[in-house]
Image (cartoon, rainbow, N blue to C red):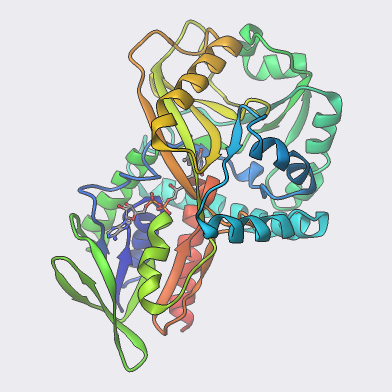
Length: 402
Ligand SMILES: Cc1cc2nc3c(=O)[nH]c(=O)nc-3n(C[C@H](O)[C@H](O)[C@H](O)COP(=O)(O)OP(=O)(O)OC[C@H]3O[C@@H](n4cnc5c(N)ncnc54)[C@H](O)[C@@H]3O)c2cc1C
C-alpha cells in the first residue's frame, strides 16, 4: 500500500520503518531539514519500560494546587487564555482516580512490554553499537521508606508484564551505581530496573532512516510544510504540502504537538497539550554514573550517553519562552548541588528545551482516525522514545487488518 507518514520525529521514523519492513511503499514528510529536530531531539534518552506509569493519579491531584501556585520547583503550571489547557486539565483530573490510574497503568505497561520486545528486534536489525552504546539499568531514588514501599507495591504488577523491578536499600543502590556514594542529598533506597536502558534519540532515528531507505526503500522528503489532507469520496487520497500534493492510500499522523493544527482541516481535535521540559548535555565529571538515575523529588534524570552526561527533566505548562534560560539554570544548579561529581558543570552549557505532547491519561493516541485511511500515532508525552517501537507495530497491524 502507498502510505504517507507525516512527521519525522521518533514516532514518525519508527512508524515508517515498521511499515516499510511490512512491505508498504512509504514516504515520510517533514518541514524540518532532518529527522528528530523537534521534541525527539535531545530528550532524556531513557528507554524506561518499567516506569511507564500515568502522571494522573490521586497523589498528583493533591500536588496540583502547588503546581499552579508555583510552589514546586520541578513542575509549574501557569493559567492561560488558551481554553485547550482547561479542557485538558478537566480530563486530567478525571483520570486522577485510583481506578482510572490502575486502568491507565495496565494499558501503559502493555504498550511498554510490546515496545521492549519490538526494540530488541530493532537492535538486531540496526548497525551494531546504536542500541548498545550505553550500559543498561535504571534506578529511581526514593527519599523515604514510604515512598520506596509505594513504588515497590507496583513490582508484582510490572513483573507480570515481564518488566521486573527490584527494591534496594541505600547500600544496595551504591553497589549497583558506585557513583551514588558522591550523591549529596538524602535517599533511603531505590527501585532498580535492570532491563531499562539509554538510547540516544538522534542516532536511533538516523539509523532507522538509513536502514529504512536502503533496505525497504522508505523515502524522506524534508523541508515540506504539510498543509492539509486531500480526500476522495470520504477516504484519504493524499496530502497537500507547500511543495505540491502527494497521493496515497493511507496516512499516519505523527506530528506531535502540531497534530491538531493539521486535524483542523477535517474538524477533528485530539486532547493533547504541550508540557515543556529541558535537557543539558555536559562532559563527564569525576564520578559519572553508568546507570540512569532518576530523582523524582527534583524531577530529573541523569543518563550517560557515550562520553557525555545528559540531565533532563522539569515539567512546565504555559511558561513563556523568555523563561527557558532560567529553567535551564535551575536544572543545572540543582544537578550540581545534588551530584557535583556526575558532570563537568563548568563546561559550555548545551541547553535544549522541548514540549512533550501530553494526553490527560498519559496514553498515546494510536488508532484509526476520523477519515477512512487516516491513522493517529500522536500524544506520546513523556515516553515517546520508550513506546515508539511498540506503537509503530500497532499501527502496522491496524493497517494490515483494514
Ligand atoms: C525534556 C524531555 C525529556 C524527555 N525524555 C524522554 C525520555 O527519556 N524517554 C522517552 O521515552 N521520552 C522522553 N521524552 C518524550 C519524547 O521526547 C516525546 O514523546 C517524543 O519525542 C515525541 O515524538 P513525536 O515524533 O511524536 O514528536 P516530534 O519529535 O515533535 O515530531 C513531530 C514532527 O512533526 C513535524 N511537523 C510538525 N508540523 C509539521 C508540518 N506542518 N509540516 C511538516 N512537518 C511538521 C516536526 O518538524 C517534527 O519533526 C522527553 C521529552 C522532553 C521534552
